[in-house]
Image (cartoon, rainbow, N blue to C red; front, side, top):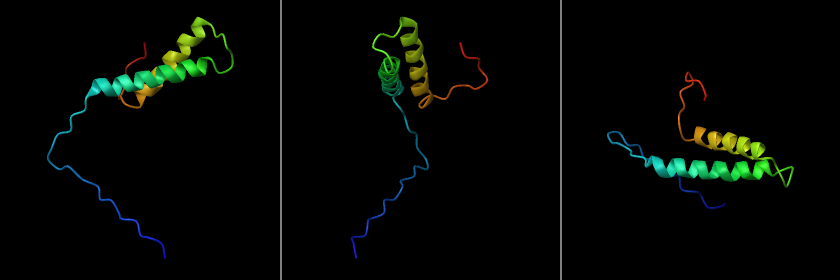
Length: 78
């Protein structure tokens, strides 16, 4: 018989406040989006147009932000 894994218990906070430092979370998402967008813009060509680069950067930054920020679904996109 192999070793049994110890189960981890979930810690539940019943009466408390969790504070999240928003700037580092958003900064990380933007940086990840910029990196992904740059790579994706250059995926099929070594010389993408400025418009293609900007479009891909915007798409990937917003996709990464969507993972950490709750956007209002009723608010129209700019």
